[in-house]
Amino acid sequence: MRIYLETMGCQMNRLDSELLTGVLRAAGHEMVADPRQAEVLLYNTCSVRQHAEDKVHSRLGPDLRRKADSHRPILVGVLGCMAQRLGSLLPARYTGLDLVAGPGQLAHIPAMIAQAAAGKPAFALDGADCAEDFDAIDLARDASFAPQRSQAFVRITRGCNKRCAYCVVPAVRGPEVSRRPEHIVEEVRRLIDAGRSQITLLGQTVNSYRWAEAGRTVRFSDLLAMVSGVPGLRRLRFVTSHPIDFGDDVLAAMRDLPNVCPYIHLPAQSGSDAVLKRMDRRYTRSQYDELVDRCRRIVPGVVLAGDFIVGFPGETDADQAASAELIRHSAYKNCFVFKYSPREGTAAAQMPDDVSPTVKRQRNHELLAVQREVGLAHHAGYVGRELEVLTEGPSRRVDKQARLPQPGRMQLVGRTVGDHIVVFDGPIDLAGQYVRVRITGATSLTLFGQRCDD
Ligand code: SAH
Ligand code: SF4
Ligand code: F3S
Image (tube, rainbow, N blue to C red; front, side, top):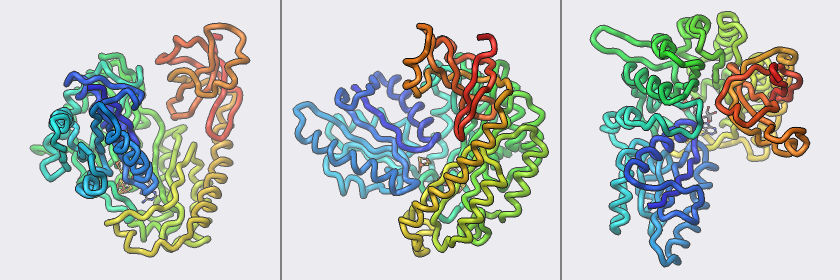
């Protein structure tokens, strides 16, 4: 069948969609980019904020109306975190919905589609046994297929054992399970053999990775060492790290293993002790500051990125000022700032959502403005330097391309080891290649430069 699959969540969801695409193609289905051409519409959904769920609701109504009006059969399915969170509420609300599947059900989707096509709606949520399936689908991955030519994601853990008061992820993704290290190395080896040179290890809190068996314990730093030794792996990245569990062993591994990129996405969420405590983040402001200092001391040139939530219950102007100050102290390359969204069933949902939408919006703008300053100073520090860039492809800033002089050349975009975005001119066939770029300009989010051998 012709299948349209749209992904709405985080990097983990995108990897799920990539793996699912492989599974569907192996089952003989064809993926299409235009929903109007599709016989099956699938949404791989996110529940982290209400906004993410609203987007799915806004699609399902029209899709199901179209299905009812259409002469040819269309199947509509909701997969992933929102399916897991809402479960049977979805088919109850949407008559005609054909398929509802939790994030651990990827391997079963072809059978579910077949069942739905035979007229029987298919419904499968993740249960306690889900961990057994996990890993099998990663190992069965078709390494030759990937959305990006030179880079791939590999998951090392599933689920999360932290209980941040605001967060729905542990409820929808289940408890944390680590994959066997040899399986991870094997998957990386296959991806490298298939032409990838950059691997990003993925987990909700990668640094709590731990594999213990028969007297042997593999920590995250040990895993980094194992994976970094795969021949042909030029860049090894990982996301996301939790500020606790971030031992010197990980920082030493980053310093000593030449292909491990000096980039850490280290969400702080707030700069205020009172808010951190209510969020149950398990560290204080001074512990976070100390960690940032330690990262900078041990890993030369380390680049940091952050996440913040504004408008958490009870957040005051003084708390907000503390977050702004933390952004300055951390000197992040970039920062994601989210407006607090109460999630049913979480601890924070019991607290009054007492910061008004207007104040949330103001605080969001305020932190982003501080980050723009900090980001500009950070990026400006690279002007005049020569950096290695992994070329991704044409830059989306097509506006400038009209002014380019030679045919066959265009504005390209790539990333440095520190995850900086670099825009430069060159031939399109550089995509997937490493080039050296001299940096000539900077904005708060982007570096601009010229290829050294140009
Ligand atoms: N496991 C990762 C990512 C979690 S979700 C981590 O721990 O960093 C990504 C980000 O969404 C979080 O870092 C947090 O900043 C934000 N987030 C999570 N729950 C939220 C909520 N209820 N409202 C607003 N933002 C939220
Ligand atoms: Fe959510 Fe916290 Fe787990 Fe991240 S560490 S997924 S924010 S509970
Ligand atoms: Fe990711 Fe959203 Fe699920 S952030 S883990 S897709 S709730």
